[in-house]
Length: 185
Length: 185
DNA sequence: TGTGGACAGTTGCTTAAACAAAGGTCTACA
DNA sequence: TGTAGACCTTTGTTTAAGCAACTGTCCACA
Image (tube, rainbow over all chains, first blue to last red; front, top):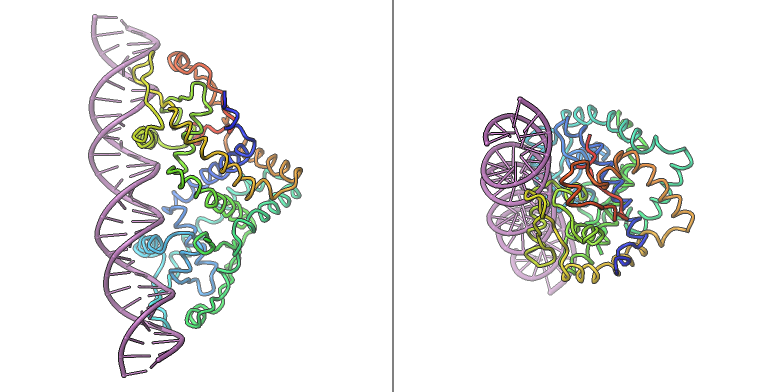
């Protein structure tokens, strides 16, 4: 029997991680669903909420969420249709446009976040002792830093003069995640 | 400014976890893609490989992978079309059918696993000291056990006489993951 | 001035997966 | 026997997301 090949403990480790993440997001899902938001919707809204003028360029949103640019177009289409977000033309670069959080969008977010945080506490952070949590997060950061070499690069102002002018200071990241699109080799 | 509401450290913790998982799976993706497999394909195949007779009932596959039953139908359609899997009628329950790994499927898996394990080692387990890894996995297990209350329940033989007769002993799980479908409240 | 190349965003097409409904089969019980 | 209810799988429909192609805009350089 060559089943052993498929029993490597590293496969198990990876499986465990997947299981935890999938299970956790499944626990979080009902809150989003109840508010009529998908996970992507939520991520998009909260990233906007954290950004300087509650707004982000479409392409920056793509980089941060890991969606393709066309994906972002559709997401913002949806959210705009619901009035949670508004497209605002960029004054200095007519190619670009900003997705901006509306009051309604912020309210929707405020309606969701408290319960979401409570869920995280219940199913994740609250299960661990203070130092256990700290060690866990430290380990996660170790992996994150390797898996996303340019974790900060995408968040800092670009080198291009025009986009710097448009979005001068966007380091409002608390979840510091320019996604794969930004760091893909 | 009520931005504070959106800066809760627990949100960050959750974001970090998501970032790690997404980043890690992105690192793994090329190997699967090179072998012409999606992640779901791979997960399906490896679960079959680990199961007693290299086969699993469609609905058990659904429970383990977290896909809907219709989702499993299509996945197995794809894999069968490629000859990696075969549908086998259940002798004792004509409603049921088994997805069974073919030799070609096992070969495909064997072609992928070594590099996949190497990737896990490179981007994940190899980054951590031995005890750091142990602690990390222990913490993951703590969360897993809570997030999936019936982690083992779905894996043990069912109570139903007929399915017990069909699939008497399926505890070949090393990645012990009956997925959400099995444990959904 | 004006021309080429790079960039921003949108749209058409394709694929994947979920949900709901339908068809066939099984068990239990009258 | 036969009927009801539960279960297993598949099919139809909808939604989401990626890729590639396209339009419009910007910048650099001749």
